[in-house]
Amino acid sequence: MAATRLDGKACAAALEEELLVRVSACSVKPHLAVVIVGKDPASHVYVNNKVRACERLGIQSTHIALESDTTEDSLRSTIMKLNSDSTVHGILIQSPLPPHMDEESLTDLIEPAKDVDGFHPINLGRLVQGRLDGLLPCTPSGVMQMLDWSGVDLTGKKAVVIGRSRIVGMPQALLLAAKGADATVTIVHSRTADARAECLAADVIIAAVGRPEMVKADWVKPGAIVIDVGINRVDDSSRERGWRLVGDVDPSVGDVASLLSPVPGGVGPMTIAMLMANTVTAAESQHS
Ligand code: NDP
Image 1 (cartoon, helix red, strand yellow):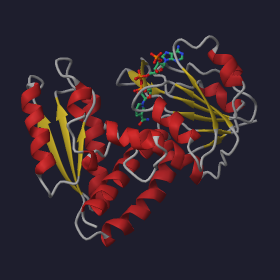
Image 2 (cartoon, protein in one colour; image 1 turned 45 degrees about the vertical axis):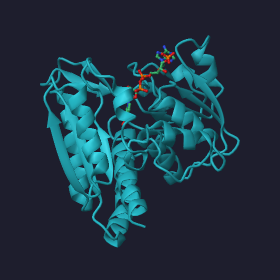
Image 3 (cartoon, helix red, strand yellow; image 1 turned 135 degrees about the vertical axis):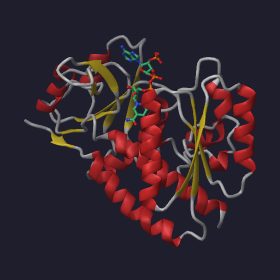
């Protein structure tokens, strides 16, 4: 069996169509501020992609690039200024921050109503309470959107999430188990005794580990649905740039699964689309 490719680009394009309508109906032009610290090339690519998505949708964007040696105090005051600027509806601090900065405590300073990444304890706390109408973390909510768009009914399905991070794995597990999605969820992490056995029992596998091609074909039940969140850079001397991107799922899984999201072109475009959706939601709720 060859798995159907779950096309994140097409799903993101469909979501962008809906967002264009919401942006034009919004009483104010949504405005996203993106703050990046340092010169990490991959982070700059991500930020540029976000700024370009804003341009496509008529969302105003402000791109604040700070030097690598910016102090925590200085970033703190940048965040506080953006919090009190009523023309800014969403604030995103691009991860990773330089090692001298405490990323979690800095992002916790973002006004929850402007936390378009959905990482603030208030927004994550709402998710734990089962309240799904707020600002949800972009990557896991993008995965949910992709599954819904593909017509997958999760009710009663056994789902395995590999990874339990604050930004992907844990909120992903909560979203899958939430009322309305209704999957039965297992979280696999680095201390799980037999990750392969857990995966083999699953109808749906969401891999968010950060280990290149860890999930092999013999980990997957025939016909299972597999979503690959991983983005890993591996050396590839056959490419001019010397590397290529691979996911957390081995391509051979495509011979066993019924539905598989590719890397690139799967979850990545959905993460950006959901960031745009959160920005529009934030603008709508700040001006309702
Ligand atoms: P983290 O490193 O924060 O978390 C990785 C998780 O994987 C941890 O919970 C860890 O367990 C678990 N893990 C590590 N090794 C194993 C193992 N051998 N078996 C089982 N579990 C293991 O990563 P993130 O959640 O931030 O990201 C995960 C992946 O998703 C990365 O490739 C990242 O690049 C990608 N990503 C993609 C996005 C997109 O838009 N497509 C957005 C965000 C991330 P433990 O907790 O025990 O340490």
